Amino acid sequence: MLPFIKALWEPKAIHRLDMAMGTVVTQLVYGKGAREAVEATAKELRRLEKLLSFHDPDSDINKINASAGLKPTSVHPDVISVLNTALRVSELSMGAFDVTVGPLVRLWDFRSPHPTLPDMGDIKAGLALVDYTSIDITAEPPMVSVSNPGQSIDLGGVAKGYVTDRMAQTLGAHGVRSACLNLGGNVLVIGVKPDGKLWEVGLQHPAGEQGKYFAVVRAADKSIVTSGVYERYFEFAGERYHHIIDPRTGWPAESGVISTTIVGESSALADAVATTVLVMGLAHGIELVRRLGLEAVVVTTDSRIYVTDGLTDSIHFVPGLNPSLI
Ligand code: FAD
Ligand code: MG
Image (tube, rainbow, N blue to C red; front, top):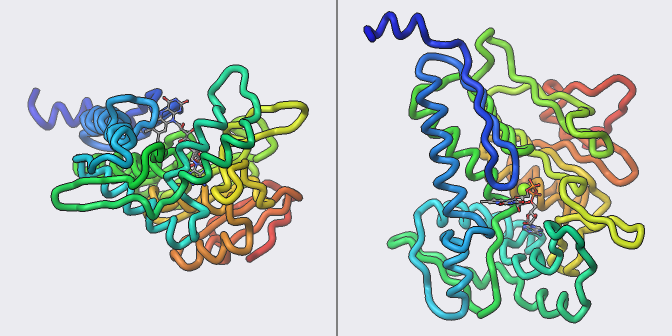
């Protein structure tokens, strides 16, 4: 088809939905070449899922885990990049974020149809294996080793963000200037909407059903990543146990924070920091957010909402809510 006729036929927007990484991944992409861009991005999603999954026995992550305490593993450079972001946040949070939390995540098996509380002895043994300083990385050639047998890396707190960044890069390489990606709460917007207005990203109400928002953030070229203790949990003997583990106790974090939204450039960094604030709590979490030049919306157990001052012009709350500036 002649190029100008093809341009006339070009649809205004391409919307694609994939199931990946245990969640729904949506792409809304505008402009010429959107269809090819979306296809390429879906391929990139599959490639990275295969590389980074804790659940896939052939992933680079599981190869590293199988060689823990034995030998270094040759990995794809993407694994080095995502681990570098994870380790940076681990250091800055003094281990509140720790991707070697794998043994504890396995004990708290949130995917089981009949989850129970782990044995205290097992938690103690698991805690002894959690230590991000045991990860050793070389960039050239890309290799990763973990010091002790039984240790295992779980990128659940950061990889969705990393994949979002890479998908956005793929769209960019195809000339896309207006798009919105959503990987189960990891939202990234490219440019502005085709009508020139800012994108509007709803923030999930921690106590409401899926899709009930308590605020909207208006943004261009930003990642808006939300983590909440309500995302994955089970109930046992009347108590709720969620999936963000405090690496100091081995138990679901009880920091007084139930939901955190981070706004920044890098989705990987925003993802890791959103998880970290749920472990560190409001005061220390906001300190970390400021240090990294990010913005945040934090909801606490007592239903208070805190917003960093850099967001005041771009966030709009549903009527009746009285957020505090922090
Ligand atoms: P976040 O707050 O971003 O992360 C929470 C997750 O981080 C926890 O689930 C745990 O994995 C990890 N974590 C907990 N505590 C800490 C801590 N202190 N420091 C660091 N990390 C911590 N789910 C499925 O059900 N099926 C799948 O096949 C599947 N495949 C996946 C493949 C990939 C590559 C990835 C990245 C995830 C996959 N998942 C899958 C989802 C995964 O199991 C997590 O549930 C998900 O990543 C949590 O994301 P979140 O945004 O809800 O929470
Ligand atoms: Mg996270």
